[in-house]
Amino acid sequence: MTSPELSSNETTSVSDPSGENFRSGFVALVGLPNSGKSTLVNALVGEKISATSPVAQTTRTLIQGILTSPKGQVVFFDTPGFHRLPHAFNHLMGTVSKEAIMSANVVVWVVGLEPFPSQAEVERMRQILLPSLGEKPLIIAATKMDRPKSQGMIPRLLEIEKWGFPAEIIPVSGLKSINLDRFVDLLFERLPQGEALFSPDWYTNQTVRQLAREFIQEKIFRQLREEVPHQSAVLIEEFEEASNPGDVTRITGSILVERTSQKGILIGQGGERVREISQAARLEIERLIGGKVFLRLDVRVAEGWRENPRKLRELGYMPDR
Image 1 (cartoon, rainbow, N blue to C red):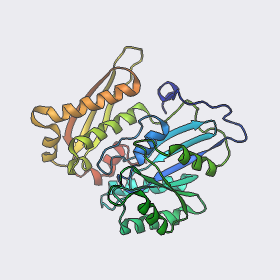
Image 2 (cartoon, helix red, strand yellow; image 1 turned 90 degrees about the vertical axis):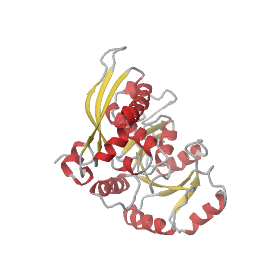
Image 3 (spheres, rainbow, N blue to C red; image 1 turned 135 degrees about the horizontal axis):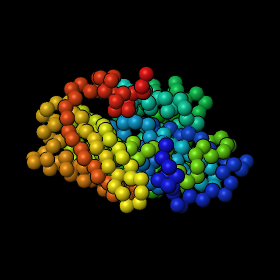
Image 4 (cartoon, rainbow, N blue to C red; image 1 turned 30 degrees about the vertical axis):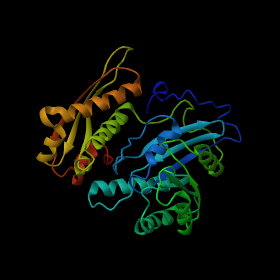
């Protein structure tokens, strides 16, 4: 768990986190890949804790963001997107998302208005959500409300109403922070009364090591965008956090790929591409911790890692037995 110094959010002010009107609980944000879940969570907590990119499947693990206000505390589960890819790794990500639904007090289905889900995708979400909801409140957050051009936002909101889910629908934009206050109000109206679950100074329970992996993976997706990122994974092998102000945090990691040809693509001519990925991730981590970082990344082939339980455990995607 991260320290309060790392997780401090200076804009937070809590008058009485144990008062009788204080509300707290867990909110699962679920949906299809690339629907805007991570961008929305980052906007809500006011800090970047989830990797984002224009490519689907950037989020691969359950990431918790924490929003605390005088009204209460919301712990967000930013979940991997549901998709039908056949690998054991993708099945694990779907399991993580379903468990988040089961653990949450409120479920938010994040629906991107651009691109808009197909009818088949809507029916798939119906099959996933309705059996797991029980009596839990469901909210449909229609994200990217600033994006629809050809048909406009209103027709698509009306189409969502026709789907017939037992949910309140609210349009939002995480990227431009539109309508987020109303969205948070809806959450607090549905959360139970209770004390804060985390210190009011925290905005995430992720460690710097975990966030470093997220940021490196994000840079891979942003650099390559096509098939290679989905067949890559980041393994943090050594992490030596600075013990004194002015010291350097040292991180050594590997980018795993499934084929030798993918290794060449990731390394790039003369190592240029992996250097660009490393530099961009290093700057992101330095911004996070407010100090200097040394980051070394190697690229190596691990054939079939997405089907290998031992490798999935090593990468942190599967719990140890």
